[in-house]
View 1 (cartoon, rainbow, N blue to C red):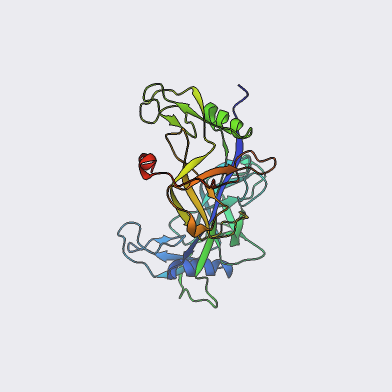
View 2 (view 1 turned 90 degrees about the horizontal axis):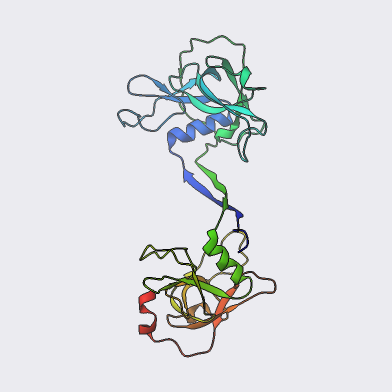
Length: 315
């Protein structure tokens, strides 16, 4: 068998949330080069501010302004920055207690190397040239020669023109996926327009896609069985929301399909039929595109619908 396949994969989605009055004031303040904290019930100044007391859970609304300079309380060197991190060159992750605050803020410190970073060093905010009301309005921290200041936090109303009321954060995960030997054989067979499963030596069920082990018996499956190519729709859903970077017009149908000879349904898109005519028991077959390594979709075969008893155990 050839080498097990691997492929780089990215999972990414935008997370949109609204902001309460405290977070709105904090982020809008950053846009205006103002750092706000909130006074907790025990008198401590919490930066970044929270809407509820971290100890008592009481609601907090007493906003105060703190300094843009502070002291590093702890740090870790990052020799290889990743995509989306604050700086493209090596930097230190630092916790900084800004003057006037009692808690520390996590951000990046622009430093030439780890020997230039130490706990207790003085730093100050380097503001981003273009600010939009996000934590990235703090471009990073940079070393400072200022002495620690005995700053008394000044009360702040938290009111700004055109306040930020919501944010969108792009969540992203980059990783390398290795399907394993069983699914590598499955993918290689698909490239040859064949579909293979693996039979459990104990219960004799054929699993497609193969998993390398029987999920029921827990024993290894290493006997390949060719199934299909035709199959039966066991259940389905109608998709009405268009996915980003997917060139398929909505609405369309995604279905679980029990291929002939298989004891596990796989999922695939149904085409060649109006979405509102897809039904349980519909007999379908794969459609391949030129050079495609897997079926583009499944279409009706024109056969009579399968009897419910023939697929009810696979729903």
